[in-house]
Image (cartoon, rainbow, N blue to C red):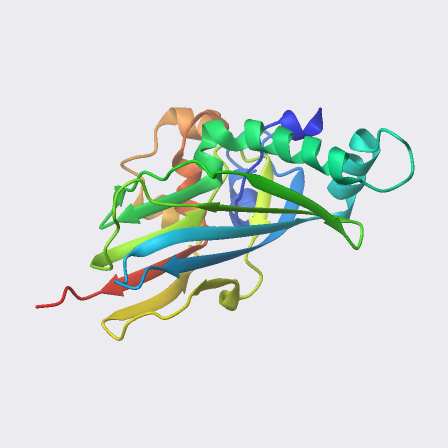
Length: 221
């Protein structure tokens, strides 16, 4: 099944650059537009990340053909449940394509309790929500991003407003970071091994190209 093939998120510009240095086969085959909402608790710790991915027409059509078991050209509840199960199992080993860091250190996230698949206007939509394993305070530099270590899927935040945190306290400033591929490689040259350039899908370094929401928060005195 196509959905069992690992999927991901990578900026198109980064793919174009990497195509000159890595295998020709390493490029996105699936495209999606995304939205990420960071939800806060009343005490202003991070409650959850809400993800929404809307997939391209070609991939959506492929999913429809594969999972439309009764051939009525739509996906009913049971068929959508099968799509949800397949996606959930496929991306679980990749931490659901999300990366969260605090001052550069990875923050562990709980697996989503469930994953919902919808089919609207002939496009597949995936929704899910994850929570930090430990309380995550708004202090220091916190980054929220999405990336695919296999380079199979490019998920794009087309507008900065698609990366959002509601009720952000005044002690925090938010910005959307869209890394320049050349700068990302130059800044991380010491971390990039030959293995990355020979087979980037075998590493987790594609996260350096990921569009991310960055919060810079001053600790309360």
